[in-house]
Image (tube, rainbow, N blue to C red; front, side):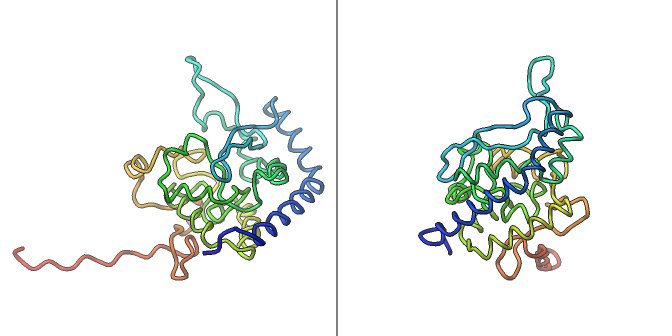
Length: 253
């Protein structure tokens, strides 16, 4: 295990600050154009703000460009994501432009460039003790789960990859994740789950097992392999191996 402690954590933080600062400067024209695009297509507010749990479960305000309308039904209930996600929002999500404001979160120290994605506060009591370990490091703009399926993963697969990252972190792994993130964005893989416009909510481990379809496949739209453990021990780096056939039963038994 390579935990983020001491000199390693300090070096990672220095890289985050330099990269986020340069990113905010160099990408400011892109962010300005994206903000104008959101304002024209969806109106105000341009930014989406929400409380999310970070390192140690401490809450912070995550920033994103808005990709959904604040539409409700006749009873005032918020409509499902697929009804609120606009064509403009789909474009922002498929290109990951909606994530650019999180460079400010990285600069503030709320997030890192690489780490488990910050999820909803309501998920905190639903995690198992093992899954909760994803909060042992800063959340990231991208992460090991994001380059191995993103929203197309089942929750248990996603959490397993998050914890694997916590236990195997290194600067080399971070650089690998960043490089592969660029590739995944260009390929536009794993943007949505097989049956949803966005990732369906995590209802708890028991509920996930009940509603999980079989077989578990990663819906990459291009028919990619499901991200399961490889012989190297890296979740997501190889295809799932078929289980051995059951032993033959003796006649008459």
